[in-house]
Length: 453
Image (tube, rainbow, N blue to C red):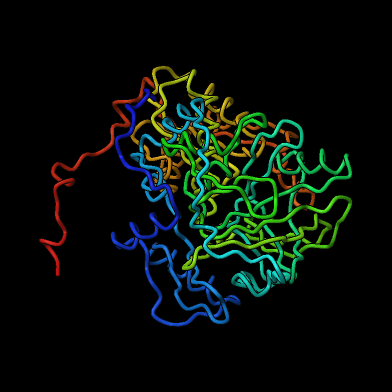
């Protein structure tokens, strides 16, 4: 994969700019009726994702103080649009720009602080109360980017953390080491100190991706977001905690993680499409909620297309870093789930495929299954990838099994995630002519609207 030229496309530096663009281009559907935030909002969104495959905007959410958007970044094309990249260039551009951080710039006028709530703040009243799954313990914040600073050197971290809403100034937040936020909390707690945090809802798209990335602990993720949007992230001082927050966000929930406090959180329908059992997690005390006057609340269903797109692209970047020295990389995908990847290569020798497979499996501990395919296979298309496995893989020599090596570490499902597998679904070099695919001249120029009513 050669380095692409710098992008000349314009990134969207705010969530609402992206919403406006998607609605103008028909990629965001606006609901015509009121929706119940308990289950109905998410079930309508899921039906939309499986059929229309559009983003959803619900202007009228029963009992809620703000409209709700979801399914906004539910495919690679939309994420690339948000960041101002061509989809085929995106992961390479992200890798290049990650090494060129752009420090945030402080501004005095911040749209996200048009309304400031501090006295009598009630997290169960002042934001939408969305319940996703039938077995969930209650309403959750699922699209909040958590901003915190390293307790010792001040480096900013951004991460996705689910928050269970209790009421008043009381919430429960999921975090633990080795996640960077969990490491920050451990440092603060060792000093008997609270950890100041800010949950950013409706964040700039580059910050949303930075929060999902695997950027090293010592790297400032606000500066990486600036690099990815090719301009400084606009920030402003929070109202009640010593943090800088994105000035152009929709909502910011300020507070601190209480040291030495744990409460039972859950159950919750996780991204594996199963429930995480109730367990003790951290306590969040809310000190302020700031928002735009016409703020739009963002929510995501764990494991749905928006969640897996935001998590999948950073994993693809990490795989690219590992495999690029072993072959000419065409593209990398994570179709199906985040516990595997597909690498498309311009193969020059039969040995390259195995080298790429082993390197890809080592790119991240979640990697459980890897497939390498030829340049003519779209690694984002699960049907194409399965076709390549069925027609090109030799099970006697093209299937690799590494026993006992762990992948996804969550305790309740860990026994299933033992061992790794890899498939060489490339054509042997000496059989390339035999496996040449059929061609259909002129198919790219066919306009179906000219043929059918």
